[in-house]
Amino acid sequence: MSKSRQVIVESPEAVVGKKFVTIYYMGKKYRVPAGLTVMKALEYAGYRFIRGVGCRGGFCGACSMAYRLPGDYKLRTGLACQTVVVDGMIIAQFPYTPMHKPRYRIDDMKPDAGLVIKLFPEVTRCIECNACTKACPQGLEVMDAIQTILRGDLARAADMVFDCIACGLCSLRCPAEIRHPHLFQLVRRLYGKYMAPKAKHVEERVREILEGKYDEELDKLVELAKTNVEALKKMYMEREIEK
Ligand code: SF4
Ligand code: SF4
Image 1: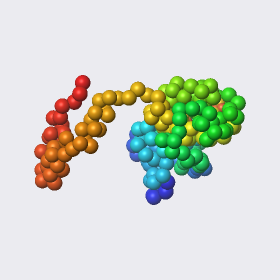
Image 2: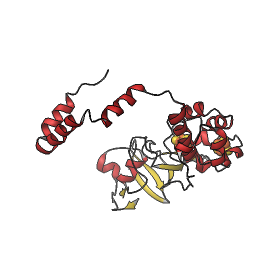
Image 3: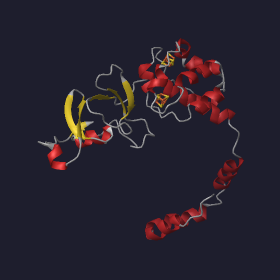
Image 4: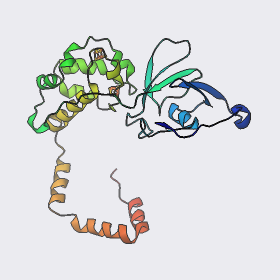
């Protein structure tokens, strides 16, 4: 993130008539409107995000941060796009969580917990402290998922971490130094490739596409995109949506 401009407001309350709060970001003090998310408050303060930002909707995990509240010893974690500023909040952002990603070919793997643990041996060091669960902005039962992997139930673990957004906050807190985002990604991939029931209708549609059944229709749409975008938009808005 870069600081692109400094907003100078002598008395913001007088100017805007809104309630303001004080936050401390990377050691600097800012007055920002109450009710904003941390991300919007920092933009109000003059920062332009070029790292540590993505979907702005709590789905991509790019804007992980740590903060402390006044009078509270606890180091809290969250997403800057989802966490609302609090008066006296002290904030630091993580551009990303450094982590080695093991290399594997999913085609050569098996849905076998032993293979998973071979790639992620640190999983066996879990001391069940639950710090990962407390750090997770998605509210996932992260420690239980780790224990489920250790018990060998990859299907259950994949379901438990389906909503992981790979923010890495759990890994930052983990004394066993487990690489949760990569581990959970592998578990979900193994489930999707080897364990989930096959979606017959998707296989059928892929086969039809490969056989060229929709080529003519697709060519017409591409042509329309070049010649009449409005007509294409109208078609899109009026498309039939499966109930
Ligand atoms: S499990 Fe870890 S990486 Fe996934 S969303 Fe929760 S804290 Fe982020
Ligand atoms: S933070 Fe690490 S060691 Fe603690 S419960 Fe979670 S996975 Fe286990």
